[in-house]
Image 1 (tube, rainbow, N blue to C red):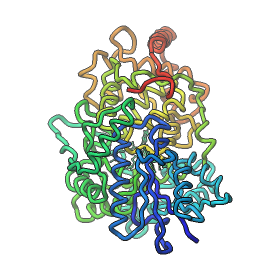
Image 2 (image 1 turned 120 degrees about the vertical axis):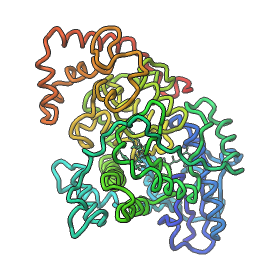
Image 3 (image 1 turned 135 degrees about the vertical axis):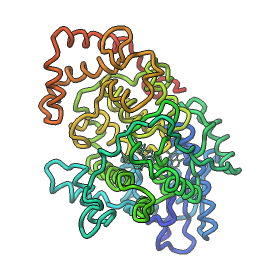
Image 4 (image 1 turned 90 degrees about the horizontal axis):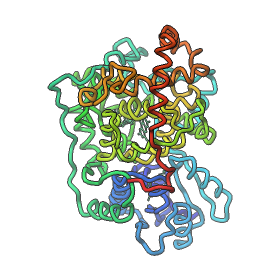
Length: 516
Ligand code: FAD
Ligand code: DLZ
């Protein structure tokens, strides 16, 4: 056969299954297309990262002797959609099939699968860059009534041997989360992230993105993402040497000034394929055995990559396409307009959105407990919120974004991702961050003009969704507190929340407004 190999923008690994055992002279195609840049309004840094990484990867493939066709965004013949462009190139090079590894999104997978029996057949190949496959995950999940990340993670630890000693978890426990909840102590200054030089390729891409996507939310100024494996390995080294020892204890901390703290910033490089999850986990594990990083940090990190990252992917591929339509709490509000403008008096929310705009990044706790928690408490519709998270982060791919947003944040999957919603009041944000001291609202007040809106929103949310949530054993303490409250207090809180929600501007859906 004479295949055309299509490599997608998040398939930038030299050991991709689609690059193995190729007939001589096979054309490997990478295609920049407008459709992928605009199906949600991606952050300009995310588009620039992907296009620059694709261009660098194409050059590396040529250096390794591959025959590469690179479709640039402004090529006049470009069909501007992945399937159409690949089929155009297959015609151009007289190929008789298109080979591609499973893409990271259902919509593309579906479009490609529909062509498996076409005159020009598409051959879909399994992605083996992960620790597990959707098929193996499905087999594991089938045996369980209620699949839980924790059980999956333990099985994966045993299967990979990561942090295992004679069949037992290192340190005698599977989980060190309770050591990983410190707020940032005064005077702790995390080192700034590495800054990679911008070569001519990256400069050209930054100019192209500025020209083609001028209305997308987000700035390009702080573009420091690694666009090659070499740069990504530099970021990994920086993480191992400078950040990992404190990664655990400050994992849940939030800072008004620092977007990155001790987080690795490796998600984008992992998702594009510049780094493999296995090499990253093994490098982190080695630091523990060399006595260079504590177990709570190392286990905390491996739990995220070997546990959560693989679990959400398994859930995505075994539950789609129905998963995307789940809305267990019946949420229907549009996206708050402040998510695009940053224009809000809630300091924590404003800073998370500003950091997102400036860095195409916010760390996990900001995504979950600030923007996510706010959207949950306001009953924002899953579709509106998912489109936002998919657009604004450099690391966003639907297979990982959707379960985190729809499941973990909004509890819209009825409890598959988390056994209870991660809802919290202003008290949590005050404990974990220094935002409140810069905020005009008081986290200790629940009603009145100076009260932190998170407080009344929190109690009103619990009251509104009591039918769905109060029977949950993990929510029983909190519902007991709600019941102990006087009727007057509950009513005052409800009124305060309703007044806030009535004033909350929502943004027009994508395509009906400008996202700046
Ligand atoms: P670190 O804190 O250094 O964590 C290490 C690594 O663990 C990350 O690089 C990532 O690969 C993995 N990881 C951590 N948490 C998760 C998680 N919950 N699910 C899957 N992997 C995880 N991550 C994405 O890669 N893409 C997304 O589109 C994405 N969307 C999210 C949306 C929401 C609403 C939430 C709450 C989380 C989302 N996450 C997503 C997970 C997590 O927030 C990011 O992986 C993390 O913030 C990336 O920064 P980091 O590399 O510095 O992570
Ligand atoms: C996100 C993205 C963007 C902005 N542009 C491209 C592109 O021009 N060409 C491409 O192959 N991939 C791009 N991507 C990544 C794809 O959207 C990604 O491969 C799918 O979402 C599946 O994960």
